[in-house]
Image (tube, rainbow, N blue to C red; front, side):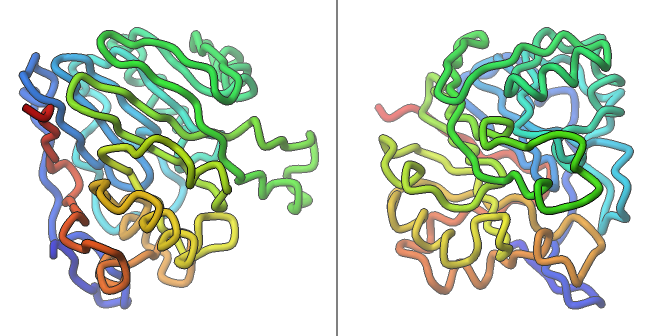
Length: 272
């Protein structure tokens, strides 16, 4: 498994694989890449989508540099943002890739913030759908409005609909990014996705370890790509310190756990 333990006791990827310009080419399959942190890049037969890319400017130290720099983004048919937290909504990244990005899709509130930033964000309600090239996307619910319990964030009421996940139907199968979320009953009832980009942080405002096991049990044949682990140099923060090795010890069919190095591609091929 592509996991090592660093000197601070954190589970981290064994290495970073740089993403080259060929990752943006028209291809005959669908490739999924972990961008580090909670971000991902998908190339679905030439339709390039990035979800929550944080390629620069994060305000906490990292354990490694992201596998892609903003100036290396050749093109993006759409940027999809799950919520406002700056480890998912990176203003510097979005501004520095704006010249090569066609569309932005997110929740209605985050779209308002995007427009204040001069970015043409399109806001959607939970369960709304939209198309990007050959990909159909739908917003799935998430429960992550932790800001209501923090005095710093009391300038508005934070609602569940301000946060989301994305279910992406590609020509080669379905990819689900649940986003940062406590486990919801609805999340256990979908038509089974082929790939889950799984945030399995053992944290009360994330899925928790037990919640991750329930989600994995609900979709026993889905390929699991763990994200949101091993990227931030914060060994005492449970939000950033899941360990895929522990997950592998408890899930059904552990061989489906596809632990990627940041930048590495997982290839999804349509069933023949």
